[in-house]
Image (tube, rainbow, N blue to C red; front, side, top):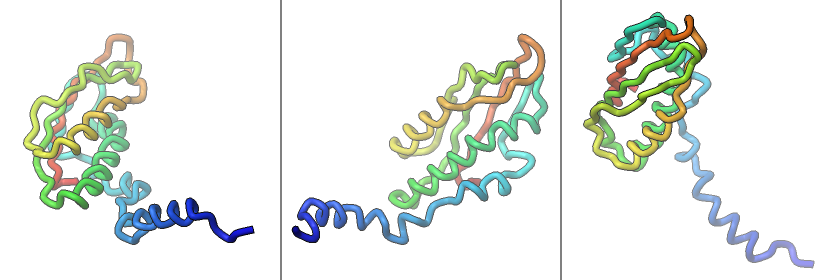
Length: 144
């Protein structure tokens, strides 16, 4: 019986660049929540929800965008710019009419990842039937 098959050796060699210390230098999402300020710069809120509630609900989104920005800066260190998003948070937590209004980010791959992350925005239920909150958020990648 042989010790190692050629396929196993090849597979191990293919994985080894992915285990380098550089790839392990990720933004630690466990620390992200503690570093989000109590007042997000560029955030405007109008409607039933208080601004603090909107910020608490945006924390997972902001943390994910931070992580995506750090990952993308490994291959594009000049990644910079602003993204203006707008959406409505319904009383039951559903996010509707979410869209990118404008952007100065010149990185197609990053923007595709950002758009994908935006699709999964959701909020906790808040208020009475038909209570809506309109949110406009200007995200500056340098602030992340």
